[in-house]
Image 1: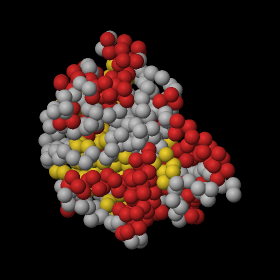
Image 2: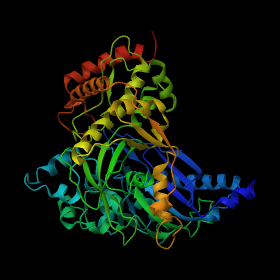
Image 3: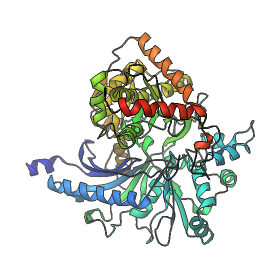
Image 4: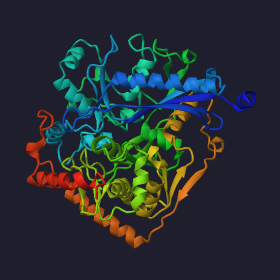
Length: 558
């Protein structure tokens, strides 16, 4: 049996998939794109103040080591030789900001996560300095001025963390998004680690010119960021450096394996879904929800609240491709919130069972604007609400409403995408962990009123990183030529309700969204851990009602 298994295996490629909620290491057969083995570790998120979201960079790095080690052990049990792993790709949560000491390898502060809102007053102050007739930030970066992106997070660290300030003064500080932190650490860290990023991750910092593909001096001066702390920008597919195994990692066979692919997670999913043609799009359901449409070699600027971003550049001498992106902050994160904060489910998988029990939200709508609203609204004053509650509402209805919320938010960004592109999508390609939830996928088809198409192997983010790594010059074990790409089996979900019902539900959702806007009238979360003074009286009335009703009904007591 083992001999037969080895006989069909070609060169293998590994992929680190470091997301907001978890880290994974996956190994693929480069000839068939078959997933051979993987391991996953959940990552803690810290919420030190209202609106603040942090993670420990050392915990993230340790989770990568653990996933590599455990995956290699599993491959050994399958009698698969790990010396066949010829390259490693990295895919990562984007925008999340790390500053570390290049001499010691120690982070100088926690990673400030993309969802973090502490920089809202910084954003408001900076926006006053941008001329109304010349939004040079958006024209150069494709991005709106928002707490979402790295530049303002780095600005906050430089302004508020003495250890960061001192390290910059002494020329010891390095900045990077998670990909930079991981690649630097995995290629030796303080002992010769490579400080780099790729064009997709650089394009999410608000410091990168997406036309010239370089760090932009004017942007760095505007945000007052010293350019010496920035990583070198490379393509998404080339050899950045070789693995140097940490003392904490037993998988010594990976010593010297090239790290040769790097893509922000949403770009990686676009590649993994093989959306290489102008007009092809995919939607990834992770912590957030991200719809990307390949616009080819041209930058398309949205008039409907979408971002313009770098899709990929698969080689030093290869052309850059761009994408339009609709970003939703809270998707899978709402399920984690129901589990960790309300305790109405014990595991994320349980939500499907609860939703199935009722098959409807019974008029209950959930707008999970925990970090304000992203695309297409870009409304930082919004906060989460649950409305339409009655004495009949129970935890099953709220679970169903949470799943519907993910689908409604996707509908909003799909509508914006259709208006920008002019040609409506005839179906939606989907991926990500939440796509295992069949009720969610059927709801999505019903609410979009187009078919939803899901690959049988949902790990397309990791697959994209592996493809980029395997195809890199000097590795060459994975062909990206159209005729060589493996055919993917798909599961298809067709709409099962009539168009009129779909529209009624969607219009009610939009009414709920409007109710969520304007909750935070003065943003003081940068300096004051108490945000309550800035909330309107209605918040306390609604909170009291939710507590009274919730104590009895959310817990399922009749």
